Amino acid sequence: PCKEMAYIPLDAEAKTKGKAAVDVIGNPLGKSGGSLLQQAMIFSVGSLAASTPYLAGCLFVIIAVWLRAARSLNTQFTAAMAEEGAEA
Image (cartoon, rainbow, N blue to C red):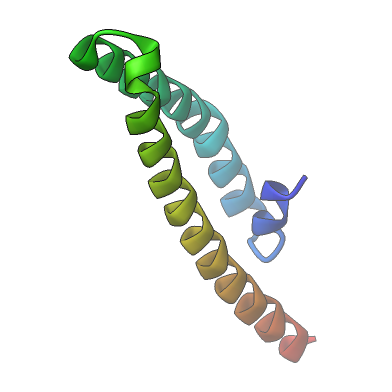
């Protein structure tokens, strides 16, 4: 539901294309990338237990990037909604 809010200020065609891109490309790519990262860490250090601290570091970096992206999206969403409100 939360990711759907990003599509509100878009026109119908952009909503459809954006949602399709996220559903078809974004979700599988994220899952595959996470699995690849985990497997690379396990193979490079030898075990899941030994790779856990490195995976935690990667997780914190990903969380920081996600928070920055969410803040950026909030800024863009607020501006688009204000522009849409001014037009009405």
